[in-house]
Length: 285
Image 1: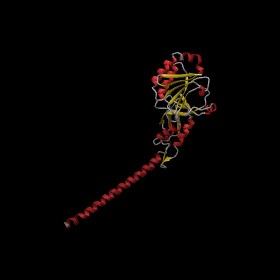
Image 2: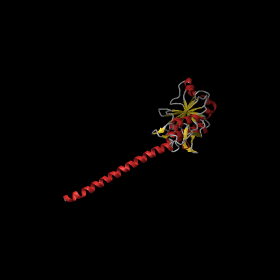
Image 3: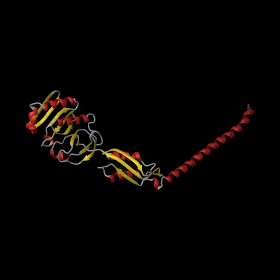
Image 4: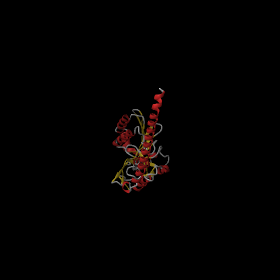
């Protein structure tokens, strides 16, 4: 046994040294290849022909083209790990650009960023269209505050996205209630509210403002010669059955005495209250 160990030990040591040498060679080869790749990538990605030198913005109608370009240019400044330029057509920050623009401009509905003709970055976007306005959580309590309120545009699906200028008169249908820019207004029942509004219009009335209150009541204001503070309104519960509420209102407005009163003295209407099941209450001045 002793002789066998002595005989085999040098062979084992030699084999161990060979394996260590092979491992060292592999590490050195990997290191040199990494260095070559590193500097090769750094060198090739700096060629002018494979770097973006122009930006085109397509599809914007309201958003400022130069402002969009400035933000994109800022995102492509500098290098990755001080080596690869961010303007490289292979490594430009596509996802980051899309995220930054979508966050900055809530008006953007869809966005696509692609390299076109090697050195041109094309930004295609579609904008949300203003259908309504959202003017805060509560209706102002005085005339002066109404003229100074901050309103924001809303898309047809209730998305609040951009600051609106002051309009004198009912240019856009208004909404009041809990909401914030960059989110959907009353997402759980927005479509139902729009359907109810349209039904009220079909009855010959002219709604122009929804007020979704914290206490669960909803007020639908009707157009008049007075400000919203003195305009007639329709009241109903947020958790009410809007189909049934619509049917009750329809039955009331085509039946006397409300039918005649609406025709003869609409300007003196204070409210139509639909919060109490099949019972409908209304009041004129």
